[in-house]
Image 1 (cartoon, helix red, strand yellow):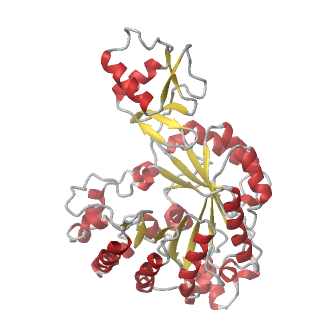
Image 2: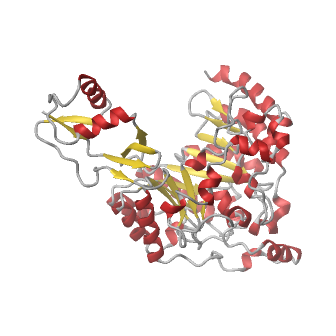
Image 3: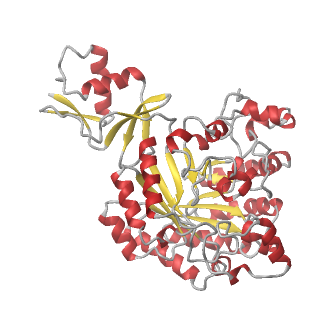
Length: 485
């Protein structure tokens, strides 16, 4: 009898994290203790299970790995396939990439940042009351060539990236979209999400994914019942995206949604969440309109921070009255966890924790956003602002593996909370210092201007705690939760 690594698993290692096990079908990665990993590698070398080469402790470890369904017994030797064999990558671990494969789009969104002019141009146009929708829908950057995209895939493979989300612009607009998909499949990189406006999510698209054995989540923008067409700038966009949600539900593809909150759709939030739930949408993220890029032309539709937070506070009881129809994230204000609990994304740590050595942004340690022009930045909001991306490396000039080893990118994402406090002495003495932990770097990057301080405090997070919103939402939930449990 021999041990066999189940077909779905691969052995991988990265700088500082050499003991990884990747599950291909989900993209999940586990890092095992070194002694267990050594026993696992020995078991995968066709040594009989009852061999004296395994110590009693190793046999116990291997039995536990069998119980965990990572290993199984085989009557004959079962050497690792080429895909399963251990690969060591020269860079730090990066779990997933959000990748904009195009800047082009088939919508004309009034708040778009990718096709936006410079801030000065936008202000001039806004003052002249020149409508942004007079321009054809296209990104401000040229679409990467297929050769460019295949090079990015090769670089992700060489860096050990496990999963990818495809976005744009409108990713499905590329005629060679499935050539990129096939390259990712060949590189053993799992496509987990396709971010789309939904206009091209149709039977043919889903057929092509099914033919390849893939069922990614389609994450589609939806900006309110009766309100969607206005923001997207294309007649019939609302009908099209609702049809896409319905089709994905019928075909068994998971869906998520994002809602851009502004004065024109505040009153539609409740009805919209209920409708998305009925259409099988599983997650919804809501954020207020960010006045940047094209949105400078509709600045009068923007709501203030206080208006946003009050909208959330008023809506949360209605969400539970409606049966909590999906997983909901209201900016950093509130997130239901799918059971009878809730989280507040603004809350990063317990106030009594010793947090000085914590990373300022834990999310950025595992995820990267690659813009259509190739900038490697920690998150999508940071890639949408000139001030957010100007210092970061570009994948057309710097190899991804190199950027994940020694670059401004690595220096930035390795910033510790103690560094932030040294940069912001006022935050260092705040009573909410650890709970807030400086807030979100993506929101900071969205501040107007190209010289933004990426270590500045997040004013939304600061206001949430210092202006009493944290106390209000927690007290409200103390009343709501007993009724739903």
